[in-house]
Length: 376
Image (cartoon, rainbow, N blue to C red; front, top):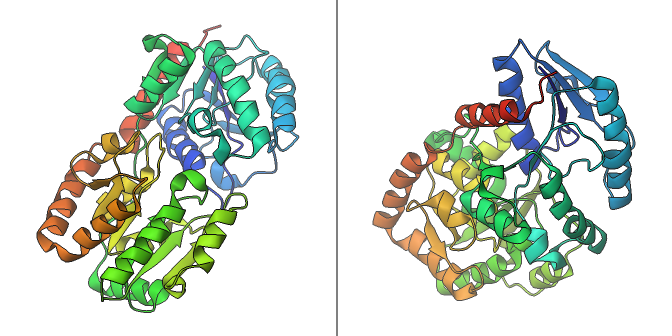
């Protein structure tokens, strides 16, 4: 079987949600199926680390697709041209977009539909493109994969696709996320927070991640709580965010907020593993990988009670209303003052993390690919 995969988001040093999903699934699939031929399509020069096995052939297909106009050129002209030359059994696209101009069977991964519910959170051109084209992608694809039951129901409701067409494959969590020793915790606390305890926020920083309200809640928590506990925010800044800048400039405790930018896995495991608690209070998520990473590291989690987060967290996290600054601040207090609660959340987190395994996810995704492939 010949499988073509859109790997344009496998970017060295810049892997985030969709990039990691692609990396973890494809690295396992190509090694588990040496009898099959995989063609990875990049939109710019690639790193050899992403050619996971000898049965992978990499192709660079310009132009680099980072704008709706270039999306159209890449998916509607360049991808069909390449598929026509390669004549694969199936085309797999983990990044939400496929071609509407090919007869090759296609599997698309729609991680979430935030752009339908909160288009104001994205640059206008990208929001308009996704709202116009995603219903077409959903209709044109032979199968749709998503990462939670919440997103499955959302896709069915928004686009009227039949239930049997949408399959759920959960994200997993990397083995690197493990509890730290006391020495490792101390080193991380010294490095990121000057030796202080700290809450950690992990995500690409854009509006739906709700960082502005988290900052306001942190300010409230510090006003009410005498111990100096810092807030470390990990992630790449997406687009301009004037609200966030304004909130920071008005804060009394701004000097205790640390922005690390994007971190590679080894540093990320340490900054999460040494944290006092994870604060992950987005108002919209299709999954929420940092929740499970924190579970694996053995730290308490505070998350939101909306969209996919209750599904992922189960009973292992403290859930809050993400639109209530008071609710978030109260959870920071509870997870700080109540040792019995902390212990219970950590114990439940270890158990909950067992439900999310990349090897199982890769097997499930492979079954979907096999069922969609058009044998020649």
